[in-house]
Amino acid sequence: MGEADFGRYLRAARTHRGLTVRQLSVYSRVSSTYVSQLERGRKRQPSPAVLRKLASGLRLPYEELLAAAGYLPEEKESPSPAQVATREIAETLYALMEKLSPADRLSVKEHILGYLEVRFGADGRSRATDAGGGTASRPGGETGAEKQPGPRK
Image (cartoon, rainbow, N blue to C red; front, side, top):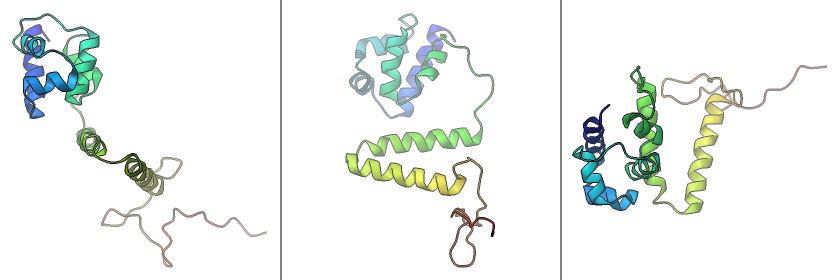
């Protein structure tokens, strides 16, 4: 990707986030003049330090900007639907978690990790789910995630 290509990429990423050049400048702590020059292809490849700041301001993975600026080889494969969904969920969570108190953030984290442990277990294997996406229940309300009794002696 050339310098002009990186500029187009940067502008697309910024506008996709609904940010002005000035807002990106504030969020990333990179001058608005420099951001504008990058977007117009007037400045050469930004340093990795500047890319890290821009990644933070755009809420994009640092590695993505490194690749876009030519520091890393570009990915050949398109992301899978699961990867796209995961990124969207992560971006939404990131934005919303900033609005919560530390206690609420901890509670959300515990709920998510608890769900994942019930859903996938400590071994990382998927548990059976019902049609609604929840863990299938056994008679008596057991989900199968509870510890089963060992063999009788």
